[in-house]
Amino acid sequence: MPKLVTSLFCAICILGSAWLPSVAKAESSPSPTPAPPLFDCKTEQAKTVPAPVDMVQVLRDAYALEDDRHEILFRGPNPALDQALTALFDLSVPKSKLEQFYTMLLYISRYTSLPGDGFALDVPKVVNLLLSTRVFSDPDVPRQIAQIQLDRKDRARPHYRVVFDKPEVRLPLNRGSGFGVFREGMCQHAKALVFYGSFSFSLAMKNESLEAYDFENVDLWGTFGSRGVVDVDINYVSIKSVDFLKGNAMGLVKAKVSHKEFDVNQHSFLLELVTRFVTDKSVQPIDW
Image 1 (spheres, rainbow, N blue to C red):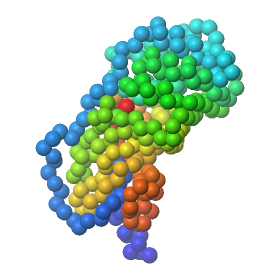
Image 2: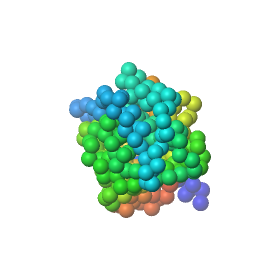
Image 3: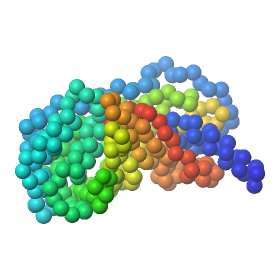
Image 4: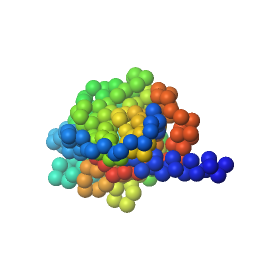
C-alpha cells in the first residue's frame, strides 16, 4: 500500500503540472525535454474578437424574446437592461465573444419580467438575438439549437440547458486556428469545443467577474499533454468552469480529463484512476 500511495502521489504531481490534465496514451521511457518548435505555437491573439453590432437591432431582438408559450420576457422598456447590454457590446472594453454570450444569458435571467422559477425560451427569437449580437462567428451554430431551458430557482445563479438538433456538434475555436501555448515540453493546442447533443451550465457574478460553471456534456478537443519524465498525450478535456477576468479576453479555466478520452483512447488503469482526482487551473485565452 505505501508503494501504491507513493505511485499515485508521483503521478498526480506529474499530471498536475501540465497545462491541462494529461494521461499516458503510450507510456514511454524518459527522454530529454525537446526545444521549443521552430513554428510559433502561441496563438493567444484571437481572430474572433467581438464584432461591432447594431445596438438598435440588438435591443429590438432582446425585447422580442418570448418563452415557449409566447409570453414576452421583458414587458416594457427597462433602462437597466438597456444600459447593461450597451456596455456588454462596447468594443472599447476588452472581452471575448464567449464572455458576451454568457453575460447576455445572465442578463436575460436577471431582468426578465416573467414570474416563476423557470421556463423554456422560444428558440427562433433567441437565435435572432444571437445573430444580431454576433456572439458566434459561424451563424450555423446557433441555428442548430432546438431547445433552451432556464432554471432560476436561485436567482443569483441561473442554470441553462441548451439542446441541439444533432447528437454531436463541434465548434472550431478561433476560426479553426485554435489556441496554443508551449508548455511542459510540447505545444498544447485547443482546437474545438464538442457538445454531445446538449450542454448545461450555471452562471454567477464572482466579485466583478462572470463565472460559468457546472458544465455538462461539453469537452475541449485538441492535443494536450507533456514531454519529459513521462510522455503523455490526450485529446479530450472536460471543462468544469470558466472565470472571465474583467477587463481582458483571458479566463481562469478549471478542467479535468474527460470520460470521453478513455472511451476513444487506450490508457493505463492507474492514470485513469489518478485523473479522477486531478483538476487543472490555468489562465488562458478562452473564446470560440
